[in-house]
Image 1: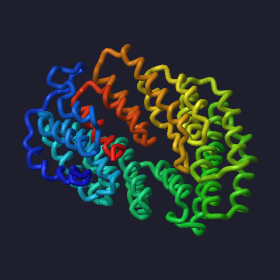
Image 2: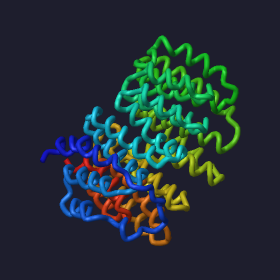
Image 3: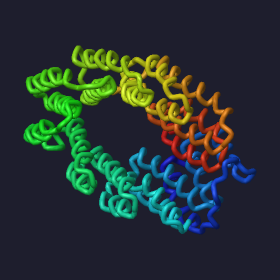
Image 4: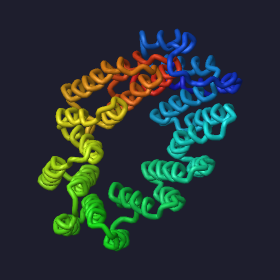
Length: 415
């Protein structure tokens, strides 16, 4: 059986999956009936893409809770998208939505839509994604989903869809900032050189110097991508002259690391990037607020990991006293870098970070919380295409639904 044929089985299993039993509440512990099942355990003993998807689907069929079914199906859909099968991914997402609705609680459905709607946009169906987002009743949550949908649209090159989605965000400022980020990353798709003047006018009208500095950094990144190095350098100089007007140690650190991120994402290298890194380190070292320091680490760590400074990035994890935020931070580290190259030592170091954190999970009483932390780490293993780390994490998941989800997510790594 090929991997593709296993994916085809998603639709064939759909008729069975729609026969849902009564919803069951998630317990803190793992009952006997929710411990890893024979299908997931058998697959982990000899993992392959085929058995990962099959085990996930078998778990869905035997699961009674529509919410748990939906969770696993979203994982299957993500694997389908990873393999380029948008059509079946879209069908699987609709099955997940149907299962979420079967619970009969509007808030439960809305919570699941937060993860489903952006993935629907990734399949290319922006209209359906927006229709789902409109079901979310809390405006701030709906805005975040709109931003996620816009990001998916931008990533697939649908600039007009991205702009139309941003127009639905209730905060004009948040929408404009996200659009400027898109422009910095993909200037040609978002108007090219002709659009610079409009963005420049908006940035110049910002009140706070740290905001203008960030805007100038993003515009400089865009000009670099467009190949206009003279304009890039002029914007960099203007930003350098403005930096002294930024008051507060925390604000300066945040501004410096935002410039570094913009330069990294634009592909700047050499002395310009090195200078931005030195500036970020200088001002980051002056931060005293624990929250500001955590925010700084969240921004600089992924850049360090992707540019060969994995030891520095891993050392920063200690800033996060609790395991859940530390796991999310570790998951954000991608040693593959912009060129996709990763040394054996870098991968092993990051894997060691995962293992060290999981060794501390015994202090957490709730199996549910332990699994949530493991699933967060799994996201990092997936981004790094590290099948060994993924197998280790999935093998430690304590709940059968979570293990089925983990297998579904790691299926593309097992090809």
